[in-house]
Image (cartoon, rainbow, N blue to C red; front, side, top):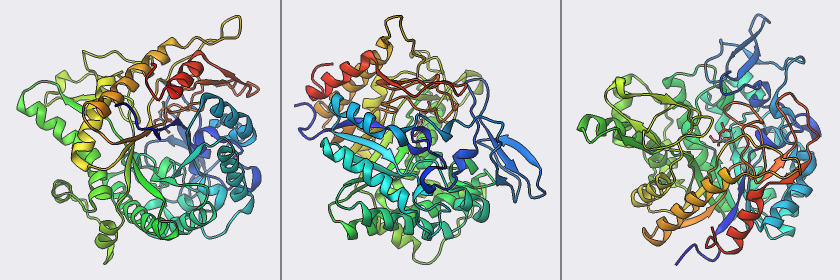
Length: 485
Ligand code: BG6
C-alpha cells in the first residue's frame, strides 16, 4: 500500500521563470524575454516593434500585428531576465533540494540557450550549462525530469516564421531535440515535450501573431507532429527514455445535474482531452473533427502526418493540477474567478487562494481517476501548488502553514487515488519548489516555494535563499514516502 518505492518526489520549475541569465553565456532571446511584469489586476504586456518601426505594447495573451517583432525596452522591468537566478545559484539550489531529499527535479531547457535563434546554430556554452546542472543533480542522486519546451519560443522564430504556425518549426525543434537527446542521453531519462500543450495559443508562448482558433489548432498540429517525431527519435537514441506529454488539467464539474449543465461540462473537459487523445491514443478524436467542421477550422496536414502521430504516442501523461472549475448552460449562474491562464467559474463549495484559484484536493483524485480510466498509462503530477504572499517574521522565519495545509490535502488525495483507485502514479513535483516568477502575472509576490528567494517586484533583492516552514514538512513527507503528512 502507499506510493511505490521508487516514487519520484521532487519539485518543478521552468527556465523562463527561474533561470535568469537571459543574455548570459551566448543565449538568444526568447519570446518571454519581451513580456513585462504585471499583477493580479494588471495584465502582462508584450513590448514589440511594428513593421513600420513604431514601439508598441500589446496584451500578452492576444494577437500582434502582422510583421511585428519582439522588442525589449531598456526602461522597463522584465521579470524573466534575471528571474530568481538559477543560472548563478544552481549549486546552492540543488544542495537545498538534496537536503529536502528530492528524488527528482523538473526543469526546462531554454531552447534559445542551446540554439540562440532556434535554428541549427548551436551554442556550446548553453549545452555545457545544462551538463553542469545535470552533473550536480546526479551527484546527489537526483533524477532530472526535463521539459523540452516550457512556454518560451526563440524570438527569432517568432519574428521570422510566425512561430509554430509555420511547419518549418518542426524541423528546427527536431534538431534541438536530437542535440539534447544525444548530448544528455546518459544523464536524463525522463522527458516531456511541450509544457501545457493545451495552453499554447499566442505569441508569448509559441510565437504565433494571430491568436485565433485557426492559428491555434494549426500550430497544435505542428506541435503534435513535432512531439510524435521527438518521441520516436528519443526511443531510438535511448530505448530507456521515458517521454511524456504535458497538459494543464482543470476538471470541470456540472453546476447541477441538469443535463444541459452536464453537456457543458462534457464540452469543457473534451477540449483538454483532445490534446491527450492525440498524444496518447495517436489520433484526432471524432468530436474535434466535427467541431473543426462546424467552426470552419481547416488543418493543413502533409501526407504521412497521421501515421507519424499514431507511431509517436507518449509513454506517460504529465499534468499540472491546481484547481477545478464549473460549467453551466445558464450564463447567469457563471461567476468568474481567477484561474490558470484562463478564468474559472466559482464553485460555491470551495475556497479560493488570494489570486482566486479554487482549492480542491478531491479534484486531484477525481482527475487521476478520470485520466487513468481513460488512458491507462502512467500518470505524473508534474505541477501542483499554492501561490501566496509570504511574510518574513522578525526572527527571519517564514511560517507558511497555508501552503503545508494545501499540500497535505493534495498528497492525501493522490494517496487515495493510488490505494483506493489503483492509479499508476509515477511521481509528484510541486510547482515552484523554490520561489520563481509567476507565469500568469509576472509577479514575485505570488510565491509557491519551500525555499524563499529575496527578489521583489520592483527588481530589488539580493537573491539570497532561505527555508520556509514547509521545507521541513516536505522533507519528512519524502522521507516517509508520503506516510507522514
Ligand atoms: C502552469 C505553468 O500554468 O502554472 C507554470 O506551467 C505556471 O509555468 C504555473 O507558473 C502557475 O501559474 P502562475 O500564473 O501562478 O505562475
